[in-house]
Length: 116
Image: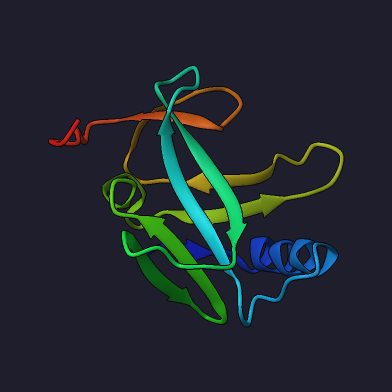
């Protein structure tokens, strides 16, 4: 399971409206890819279609898609949002992250994907 904080949900809905999409019919996509200063980096996008390799999570009225390879890295993760002058913007609170970089956009994990 993954989660979205109230602050992040409000910001996501606002951004979706700006892009002309609705959280009723569209998805928020969480993902992990190789790269970044700590080895893995987070991805956060909007998507209108679910792929067969995606797992669908529902958190309140937000539909979240995660590809099968990213699920072990993101289990129990919460998407947060902090605005204002010293705010970070969107960031992930990930209990699976062993180390994170200063920017908070990349991490390393003790999980090793057996298919890599």
